Length: 78
Image (cartoon, rainbow, N blue to C red; front, side, top):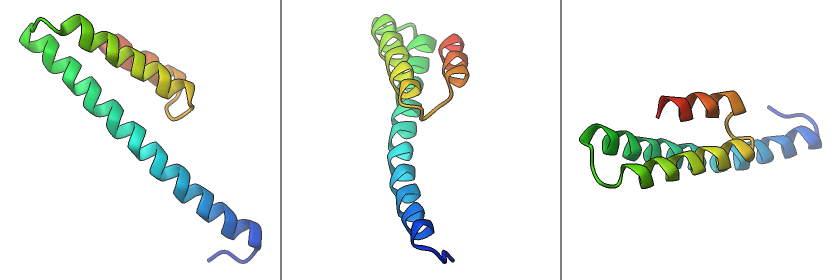
């Protein structure tokens, strides 16, 4: 358990940041999944879905939630 005031504050900050990161990561997974299903089904919305997925990946990498090389790997997988 935390002994100092700064350690207690860091626990609160870490829990807040984790909640925010989980939100963005689930958003990322769902958008990439939509794009992958659009690609596999050859639907008419493939270009829009892939553009949206790439845009979201770049935004999340810009916020520092995922690493820039992980973002590049996800984009090249699309």
